[in-house]
Amino acid sequence: MSKKTCPLNREQLEALTERFPTPFHIYDEAAIRANARVLKAAFAWNPGFKEYFAVKAAPNPYLMKILKTEGFGSDCSSYPELLLAESVGLSGDEIIFTSNDTPANEYVEAVDLGAIINLDDISHIDYLEHCAGIPTLVCFRYNPGALKGGNEIIGHPEEAKYGFTREQLFEGYRILRDKGVKRFGLHTMVASNELDAKYFIETAHILFDLVAELSVELDIRFEFVNIGGGIGIPYKPEEVPVDLAAVGEGIRKLYEEKIEQAELSPLDVRMECGRMITGPYGWLVSRVLHKKNTYKQFVGLDSCMTDLMRPALYGAYHHITVAGKEGTPHDVVCDVTGSLCENNDKFAVDRALPEMEIGDLVVIHDTGAHGHAMGFNYNAKLRSAELLLRENGAIVSIRRAETVEDYFSTLDFAGLAAFKA
Ligand SMILES: *Cc1c(COP(=O)(O)O)cnc(C)c1O
Image 1 (tube, helix red, strand yellow):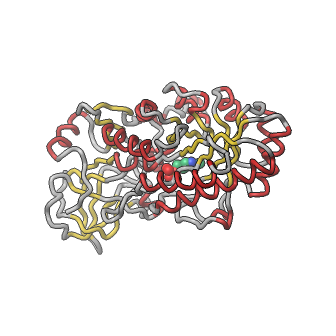
Image 2 (cartoon, rainbow, N blue to C red):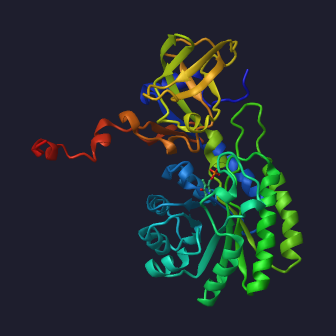
Image 3 (spheres, rainbow, N blue to C red):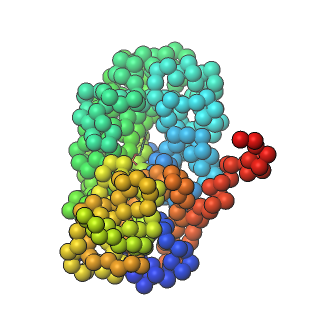
């Protein structure tokens, strides 16, 4: 019925749960690699093209290490994310530090690693200079304001807390130039889960025009533009993935017209996608724990929104299949719930699914990005394991499930015994 598939069938999943109890997220290495190659091929015309995987989407060093072998760097936004990048051997301009409201120690770590610093605000030039010094290469994040239409998750650019205004870009690059900085980048990130290829071509258009204007006005040379992340994925079976080749080709045409003809090349095109890199290649696998009939039908799983927050947070659609029942009629309309004491803890509302039995394995699709990563511990829920299906078919653990000891590890029970309430 559904064209969304999981690389493991019911028997394979059942066997797997003997080694790793549900719930867990499982990722498909071969599919992640194949997709990475499609993205690289789309930009093969730009020799300096680089994708910096947005670590926040799936902050697991095993996945980052796979992506590193595909030539991807990391886009980090916090101290621990920088440490993860370092742990897989990334350094220097393989890392871009795109943060906002940044604490000093994070700039210090990023500069120590030689990462590309992408400043979110003009006031951070001074801040960076005082805490870590100004590196030789600096990038600014541009907020195009009303120039660019909004998007549901990220909102309207004018309302967004991120980035420099156009005027501040001119002023900021002038300040850096006058301080002796010679290497520059320009960044923007204005979309999230956007499925329209034209949106990304338009973003490149805005950045190419700006690079041309800034280069002439300030007599500086740009090494790269970073068009951000935000490429969407088809969460719904009827949605169509972004045609990456069309994005690459659209940007190539603009590059010829705006960059080559103005003798501004070479200019590297860079991206920092997270969702489209791993999102479709991860699944949350869970078991039916209870069925309940009241004013509605509910199917309760052994996972909850602490394993996958997107449906509760944004009302986001995640496709659900029942292992072994992919082909049976989807004629039971139900809510698929977790066990959190929050009524919005639902993976699906009024979803037509096959009749389920207690113990059935339920597969929630497209959890490879912003899935486990957004997990949390509310209601003292323990975070699930992450597994990896290797290219050779082996399945390995890349993060064990959290234990009660992990959860309590920040509490001092000896101190509690001595504490007089
Ligand atoms: C979240 C984020 C990304 C990645 O976004 P995706 O939608 O996962 O591609 C990239 N850059 C910045 C600055 C972000 O905040």
